[in-house]
Amino acid sequence: MIIIDKIQIIEYNHIMLFCTEQHNMIGGVIMDKIIEKLQELDFTELEAKVYIALLQNPQSNGSQISKIIKASRSAVYSTLDILYKKGAISLLPGKTKLYQAQKPEVLIDNITEQYIKTANTVKEELAELEQPIVGKEYWNIKGHENFILKTKELLLTAEKEVYINSNYDLNLFADELKVLTDRGVRILHFSFEKSQLNDDIPIEYYRNNKLGDFEPSIFKRMMLVVDYQKVIIASGKLGGSFIGTFTENPLLVAIVAEHIHHDIYFLKLEEKYKEVLVQSDILLDTIAEKTFEEKVAYYKSKKK
Image (tube, rainbow, N blue to C red; front, side, top):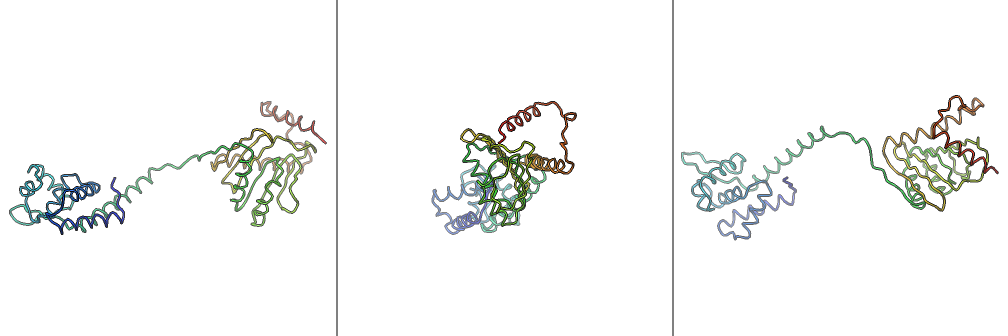
């Protein structure tokens, strides 16, 4: 692929002008460099040699050029035809076919213009072929300290809303949450445990206290959504292994956001109607339900 920038254009023009000024005095090393540069502009080696020979010997025919560059006449005539079609040389009027090289600055300008035109066309065509990205990358987070740092970093990016479902002591993130509330960011927090967050940080706190009061668990989890664009989920044992995932994947963002909303919806509905909405006759008898029941039994055993 041809790549042209302003520096290259200046360099090509300088080389080609040098070529016309020095005529046959050009040394082999310089000549090789010019040929190499023209090949970068999509010339073949023979096309470059023929063009340079015409720069040095204006109004020459194919036979004369073949003698100058020591190439077969058939190859030279074929190359002259290609260069003519490229606009790199012109054919002088008259019975005898005499050729003249296009001025170097005009040649380079034409090549640049054609390259830009082609590049823009290809860009538009590729844009039409491009398919939208369905998913985005997931980043795993290992270790409690790494999780805390990433959560603080994520919180500070919030501009509109933050949804939290967590049994963490949010005082760990008090500085970040204070920055957000001062910024006017809305923060919603749902938990089964009693909030330990300082009262001077105004967040919307929703607690489902059906399990009663119990000692804070050493098993922690966090579901955090920022601006409905980013999400982090993590869980583990304090002082033990801890693992989480961060992503901007729209599907996972939506799933976690919906989870937190539904927790709050159920809580508000039960408070409104003064009864437990999930009765035994609507349970599904699944592994998930049994696991949750085991957790409920565990937390009830830890009641103060």
